[in-house]
Image 1: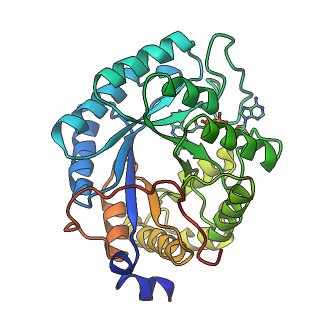
Image 2 (image 1 turned 180 degrees about the horizontal axis):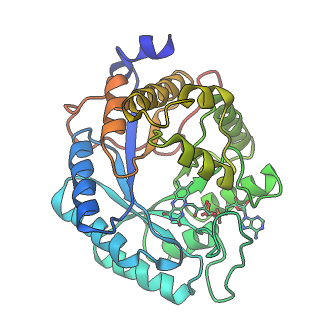
Image 3 (image 1 turned 135 degrees about the vertical axis):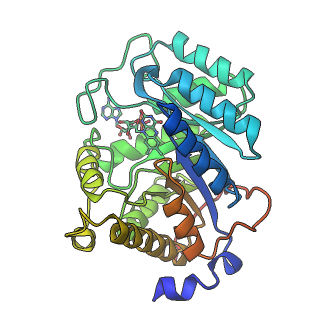
Length: 313
Ligand code: FAD
């Protein structure tokens, strides 16, 4: 019902902004498919696109090269992800200096997962930035960058409780973060309850939901388990029996993501960050279903201060 009504006029009656996340490719073939996705999604005039960065600097060269290529060949605003796990401050600062010299003014500042893998105990390096908040402060010493940080509607698995999680988010904001992008979360009631907690904690930056169109349900479910995101029963049911049926899976995926975004729009959310997995078709389909077309013209501006509010608040 919500999607049915909203898909006919959502982009006209609501200012919806989208951003797209890519990861640096590992081969020429992967590079070609990334580039296909970037150029097709550029036509939706996203607020920005971002390029991920491997923990411990494992993708340093590839991230830098991908960011530069997008900057040089498109009209897109590009944000470089940066992690600080497993590196000294000096090493991280060298990367910031390099990206700054290349003209990068937007960052997604992250701690990163422990080298042993998601969910393992994290041990900060004595000579490194210990967490996302310290990295934000470090970035701000280089320039007045636009800095996004992470947020966790179901709390980060390392956090003993929500308060610890919100304290970290508050520290990131106090140090200069202008927006938080969330871990994917398939339950909009959970997202909305989180947003209320965030506002009650005195945090007023935009909290942008991370939207994950599902390519492989099994992989998403397994990753979700490790990073503390839940998979509702109804989502299991929608993908049940579709493991060997990629066409139907794809149709269901775009409907699920479009339905989620349409419902969030109805709750007053205006900005959405898509985890694209370097593929354009699902984000394109979802945006189409929401009435966001390739003819929007110009880059949309991401929300400034104030940010998303539940419609009822
Ligand atoms: P922080 O914000 O520093 O901490 C996360 C939470 O852990 C805090 O809220 C805090 O409550 C808790 N915590 C931290 N330290 C402690 C402690 N010592 N004791 C108790 N609790 C603690 N990973 C990559 O490798 N590359 C990427 O490009 C990347 N991009 C991402 C983009 C988004 C939008 C998101 C949501 C995640 C991304 N990640 C990426 C994953 C991220 O690196 C992991 O989730 C990582 O485990 C935490 O990084 P963070 O910046 O959120 O950490």
